[in-house]
Amino acid sequence: QVQLVESGGGLVQAGDSLRLSCAVSGRTFSSFVMGWFRQAPGKGREFVGAITWSGARTVYTESVEGRFTISRDDAKNTVDLQMNSLKPEDTAVYYCGARLSWGPSLHDSYEYKYWGQGTQVTVSS
Image 1 (tube, rainbow, N blue to C red):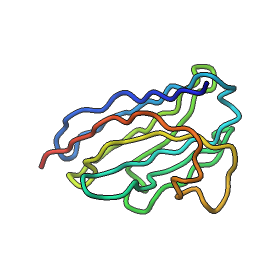
Image 2: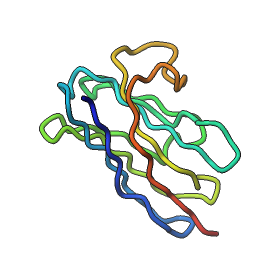
Image 3: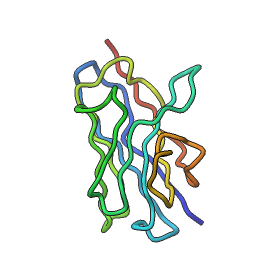
Image 4: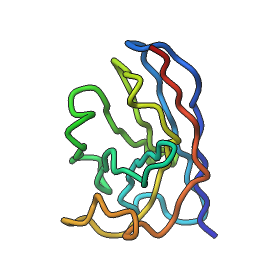
C-alpha cells in the first residue's frame, strides 16, 4: 500500500520561507512523478508544481515560478517543496501527489493516483 505523508507546514509571515516534505512508502519511489498541489478555503485543488522521476525536470504554476522549488531525494524517498518569499495568497493546505506518467495533464489532480493527507501553510501579512 502506497502512503504519502506531508510535513513542514506552519504559520509564517509574508516574506518568510518554509520547506515542506513528502515521504513516500509502499512502492519504488523512483517510479513516481511527484506533484504538489494546494487548496485554499472555498477553492479547488490547485496545481503548484511537479518533478520527473529522475528529478531532471520540474514545472511550476506561474504564480509560484521563481519562488518555489521542488526537489526529490530517491535515497530518502522524499520530495520537498521549498517555498521562499511567501505571500498571504499562498495560504492553503498543501498536498503531495504521485502518478506514474509525465505529460500535459500534470496540473490535473485527477491524474494523480496517490495523495497525502495535507499540511497547512498559513502566511500572515
